[in-house]
Length: 233
Image 1 (cartoon, rainbow, N blue to C red):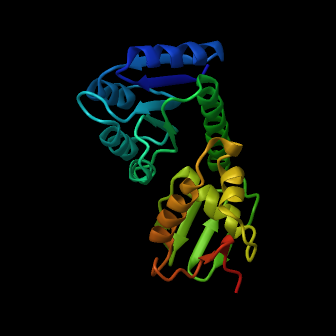
Image 2: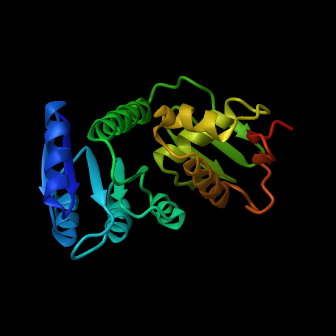
């Protein structure tokens, strides 16, 4: 049974989330204080974290930042704040999703299941040492699908699961232009339940990590008005 931690100071929302998740056979724990929630998330093994932004003690942004230093698990941030800057900040700190209140509890359950399934698949791929796919080499960039590792000039580059998935998908389809909608559906697998701004944020983060000059990318190109493609020259 997958174990989920909810860090939410509104008891009504937290209990509603718990009821729907438990009805889907998840084990759910709740913490109402940010500091206590972070301590518990670091000390115990949870499969996924649902994290409110505005919390007593430490806010969700601080918790996400600290947790990403120690653990790699799906983090879904929830907030009543609609500003794009908050969403971009959350994703930039390593959150896998950003859900705006009010939201449907059934939608939250669907997002939880999608993120857990994708994370389980990637974890299995990373732990399988049997070579299946040759390394993808483009200039100084090397992508190893079987080991879930990326190198630039021999130096390892640390990517989140979503960043790696996005880079690998583009690299396996060089020269093909994909719209933000198509990339969102392919990588996040949540159809119309998300915001394609997520794609732009992850593209920018990827460029900062793999491009010699992020403002003039040579690997992930922008095709204005159409989308993005992996350079095949």
